[in-house]
Image (tube, rainbow, N blue to C red; front, side, top):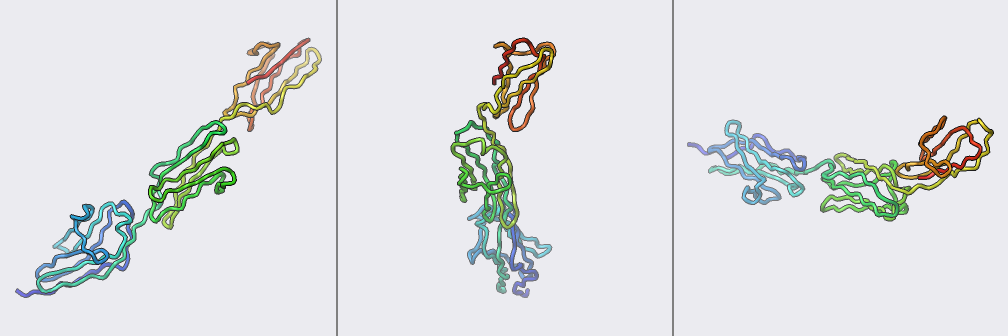
Length: 274
């Protein structure tokens, strides 16, 4: 029996990059007589499965390979790694390898569309996972929101929770809001809608109209509201539903502009209400 000191036939690379929450594997190949045992070190401290249940050690005797397996890798696994093969004839150490763990931003909890009344406080939040830490930006119409317009943003680096707050909300805050998370690995974004309820406002009142008998006439009024108001017409104080040659319609712009058309009578009082 001749003892042969271990020799590393395939060494570690200088650097490795792992993905957060996924399995990370390091391996070397080596020979010796008797078959050497392998130890793994992180920052010069030996790794054991008893101190971290995510860690496993495997050996393939047919290929002379030795593996370090780390499940659910995270930022705590970042460091400098090295292995050592040992038998009765001596030992040999591998090169040191710097390990980096990264993850493209992902939304653990997505923001949700919200509907509020005017003057209420709007709060939209979401939770983001990323490594390195993501930069979070809230956008309105493609542009970052500004505190001068009533927007407050916070980001808790420990929990990954990003929050957008708008106090005394008004209709100017209504629309699509996008939250964007980005780091060196990639970008993720989600878009939600802020809906603001507002009571009807009369923009264009009815006007008195003189009409020649047997000629058609049209009355028009305009309201602004959110959501769109249900508009009802009145004839001589009574709700209008249907009369001969009567038509009622709505044109939708940013506000509701209703119109009514019917033959003129000798004396007509028309009203519009929401």
